[in-house]
Image 1 (cartoon, rainbow, N blue to C red):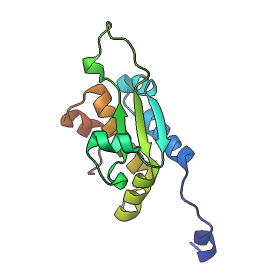
Image 2 (spheres, helix red, strand yellow; image 1 turned 90 degrees about the vertical axis):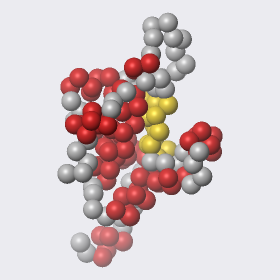
Image 3 (spheres, rainbow, N blue to C red; image 1 turned 30 degrees about the vertical axis):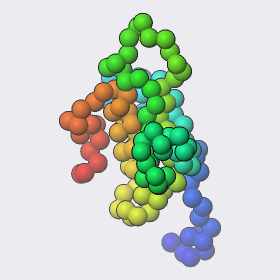
Length: 137
């Protein structure tokens, strides 16, 4: 790639990360696709201080994603909804990890983070995750 082309590049914004996550949801196995689309998706640069406190994390670059909600395996029809379940993707930590790795596409990394947050929503085991997220291959 010519130096001029590289010099004009900018970091992908929140919309690009959200588009990559939406594309990853579209590739999920059919039984999970519609349910995953019912989870709100939010992209922010970093987790908030209360989020970091809840996770016991000090460095905002340590947190690439977060699930907020009640897992489907724990929901009851008697529960009062507190709002939608939300998956948060944190753009700057994702971009930082992507740059540090240098061996995966941004789309693959976003999909990996998304699947692990969806695992909290669906109550997936490690084996369930492994069938959907072939990260190590």
